[in-house]
Amino acid sequence: MNADWLIPDWPAPGHVRAVCTTRAGGHSKPPFDALNLGDHVGDQPQLVVANRAVLAQALGARPVFLSQVHGTQTLEVFDDSADGTTADACVTAQQGVACTVMVADCLPVLLTNTQGSLVAAAHAGWRGLVGEGGVGILESVLERFRALAHVERAQAATELIAWMGPCIGPQAFEVGDDVRQAFVAHDPAAQTLFTPVTGTSVSAGKWRANLPGLARQRLAALGVSQVFGNDGTAPWCTASNPSRFFSYRRDGVTGRLGACIWLNR
Image (cartoon, rainbow, N blue to C red; front, side):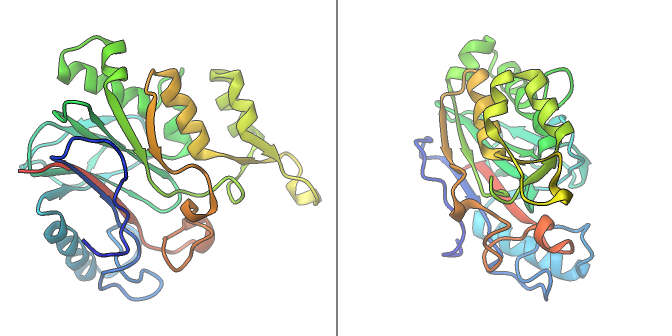
């Protein structure tokens, strides 16, 4: 592993491996420097292929890349699954297959169960997190875990362990009132995770949203109490750490980080 990449500090079983990349270790040129894993952002295709090969070699497993659309679909992946299938989360019980999501401000959430029989990766931007009718990407992942583990919903939740990677932080993530209302409609307690932006007329009706806090709130409501990683502080903020993280909000044209979780062979 590249020394700059993030290795989760969490009580997952030993054969469950996970990592979140940074900008370090790749071949891409500015503004995609250096380890851009996104093949849809305007980078040279051959460099993206080379970067993905760097990742696969470091993992010792095959990363499966999704076509992410800020939705709520969870896909089960296998060693012969094609890259580019539309989904915003994936789950597997197969060894040597790395569930992978790409981010550049959205929140990556990695999950496993206490037995280490299943792993999943979710791409949780605000749209996927809030979902529709109270069912977002985290609810979708939990339902797939329950089905694959053949256990009841509550049992599946209590046996889950989650790790949240870097995303845009609470001081940098400005949203409109429609976003705040969407979360509050699902859970009035979400109001506490929005702070009004004040000081300029341009900011009227704008709020700063605590994306990792909102994800923790949704996980807690689902019964997932073991949540590690991103606590909303500055070191986790993609927008505030340009030398380490890609950020779409900050740069517009930029690369994508990868968050991966797999069962070691």
